Amino acid sequence: MKITKRILIAALVAFAPFVLAQESDTDTNSETDSEPADKPFAESANKPAAGLSTENTPESKQVSSAPEELKTIDPTKLGFTSIGQMKTRSASEIGSSMWSIGGETLDRDFAVYDNYKSYLGKLGAKGIRLQGGWAKCEKQPGVYSWEWLDKVVDDALSQGVQPWIQTSYGNPIYNGGGTTGLGGSLPSSPEALAAWDNWVRALVQRYKDRVKEWEIWNEPDLNAKHPTIGSPVTAEDYAKLFIRTAEIIRQEQPGAKIYGLALAGEETFATEFLIWLKVLGKTDLLDAVTVHGYPANPDEFTPNRMQKLLKTHAPKVAVRQGETGAPSKSSKMGAMSDKPWTEVKQAKWNLRRMMQHNGRNIPFNLFTLVDLKYAQSDMKGMNRKGLLFANDDMTVARPKLSYLAAQNVFSIFDDSFQPAKILKGPAPEISLFSYQKKDSNQAVVTAWINSAPASESVETTPKDITIPGVVFTDPVYVDLISGKVYRIPKEQWSSDKKSTTFTKVPLWDCPIAIAEASLIPLK
Image 1 (cartoon, helix red, strand yellow):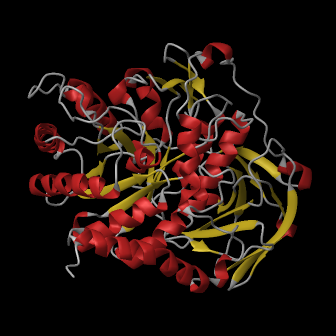
Image 2 (image 1 turned 180 degrees about the vertical axis):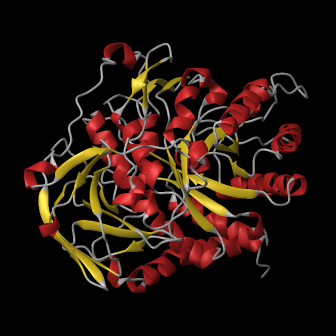
């Protein structure tokens, strides 16, 4: 009997869950006892159910743009002394880091770059994720309009922020050109695929002197789960589009980094895609898989499952967190938006999500810089995941608490640190990571309570913490939401040549940092 590629792939996909189960049973690390149990990256599959709303009421008209009260901890109650406010750094002042911020949906005009560009460089993220917008670039066959994208790319670079561009979505000027929004269909007709190839080639030729990283499509697995949105997309369909697109990028820019999947959460889809690449001998086109995750508890480390898949099917391929972030208000738009959110909860959720990934050296893109006003037939309303509060006319009212929190984190945790170490916390519900400078071994430690979703509470729990292999000489305590810095009483810490122990450290359900004072400049 002739064994076709489809039969082989079907057999491999059927076997994959057994392989993953075997790995899950044996892949343990005694240093990670403080982590909450990981769930499959399919946890993020709650996104389409919440995001594909038919709500037509402009939610932002009903929401106050007034800033919320900064609710945060008060370590002075435990004898700590306030010594000032940390000084943040702009992107141009930071050499390099693994942090990126979302600049998505400009291709569909759900945000206006000019309205928020003054906040980009000040934030401190070193990358910005953009969507190339085939339909916005090519409104007449063969005629490209790059002005809108030129403006964004060049301005971001001028602020020290490196764009990375996604090739998406479809283009309705071509029959079989695919659709233009989230969960839509891929280009499929010979005419549309030839036009897609031409656009991708022109896109890379134009920006290859400024852009080094490319992502191919966005959440193709959403369409696989919701086939009523355009034509159903299979993993085979996406693999073929990925291969033809990646080969063009490699031809035009041999040293480019290419990312795939931008996965919403469908594990079977991801498995089939990776198997297709392996069977066709094209895995070398894929530098990294980007995953998206929106779990209720931000400490559920969703890339873990993808790392196990890659270990089986593409061991040289890395994982990146391509899109994740919490909303600041309840609404009808986007993942997790139906929960009772506030700006405090958003800031806490984002910080925990960020530091859980950074502690494992996973490059991270925070979704997103500004609130997005969706205006598709099946998606209408404000997505309040932005770090900047947007008015109904898409102007920026003000930064949210989450902007200030991200600014603090981006200013401290850059590539001047060695890869973080995962430490065993004083209890299973405590996440604990240590970082040391490459040039001096000066240290920063992060810690927080990870056992439940982010809350409104500002109550702290005093915990004793021992940091092995780290010697502090002048430690300070940093509230990463407010940026306030506190002197730790001498009687509450001690160092020997092998470790440092802190007693009665105030912890809460949000990351705090203990750092050598010289690493935290004050205003």
